[in-house]
Picture 1 (tube, rainbow, N blue to C red):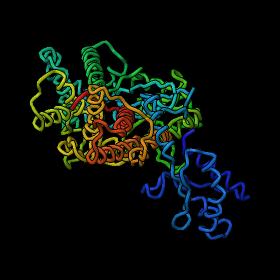
Picture 2: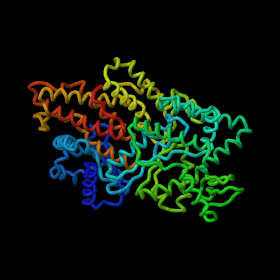
Picture 3: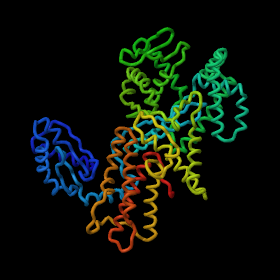
Length: 572
């Protein structure tokens, strides 16, 4: 049980002694430590109900709580402030015991049991074949990977899958352009995976433009689509299969670079077969025929009406997503299934999940849809349909090159690896910092800053602490959690207690931005302390305790960065 829960229970017990019950109240951290480590609005909540003066009720509650100071050594003081807030100040003994807990728990500090014993399935980073792994995929990947790590930290058994789009009219357009360009032969001359994918992306763009501009090509491209859907042995289907494998290989390279790996794939082609079968089986009770197509009439439920099987008899994205839900639950039997998409797909998925829930309520009840916004690159909105979007590799290359310019020339292979870690953190940070669905304007220069709000700043603060610990070890100074005589608790000790609560909140809401906000505040607090104190000093009774604080800060930051999918470099 975390300290926040203990304080709420103590307050509830005090209210019971006053014969007060029947309403809920909050226990939160005040913005200013002058107002305590925790504060509750219990008096104001109940005063309104009882028609009492909030401050008078707060005084009564505090008088009842005062026994807690003697019975519970984690409380130093309890007081009333403002219109009736009750503030709790934690004891130095508790703050010190938290340092011991952090050091003892190590990489497990912050873990909880919210989803212990449950199976959680996370689907993210689903690529479109023949299209580059671009910044939109990076946004999806960053959030998906962080949610995956939060789920594992909660005690769940987690499976991670991707849902590649491997069949569509768009892919047929790309295959047409590839064959027109004798592309299979050209691919044999390209050695770099990123250049192979860039070429296939060009085919996708050229095919899309040709389809829109030359109506006479449309029957031919639709024929290619039919050959792919039916898996007909042909030059077109062979080209498609070769390119599918190239795309999947590159997808694995890119996601590994970003720190992700996948347990399995469910392909759109197989979801389409499953989805079409389910939709056709439910014509008349959930779906209906309309002008040669099969639709779901969402208007009856305040949603959009959407086509699930088109006039040509092919399953649409809607039917495929129903098939995907079916395959997910049949294969993995999750207690919770989380998937991540662009926020502009929210209304679409309300229709799909609602329709699917009428077929099998579990598919709806156990599914969580998490969204992210769109990213602009220095102000220009990105749209992948006709190109113009930087690929993930291009953006990482830009960040890497900019980092090399800002810093000294790379001397060793190790330095190069560190610069890659910094580049990835610069890319992930603004994505993970944003609230669900909020658009982002990405600027490579500010994202690489070692000062202020950035991934590299968090890494630098963490590595700075590690360098202090390394120096202490060289000087044969370990750490000691014995409270020095006359020691006055510093803000950093107070803020370190919050990490488990932040992790729990981020997990319950599936919102990594809570972790980002906390790590920024913690880093700023540490750097302010570091700039105004000498941590390692000879003949100081406080030095070993300061090292313990530094070690606790380092461990907490390292754990937090892990949850964000950001690596902690050995040096910077």
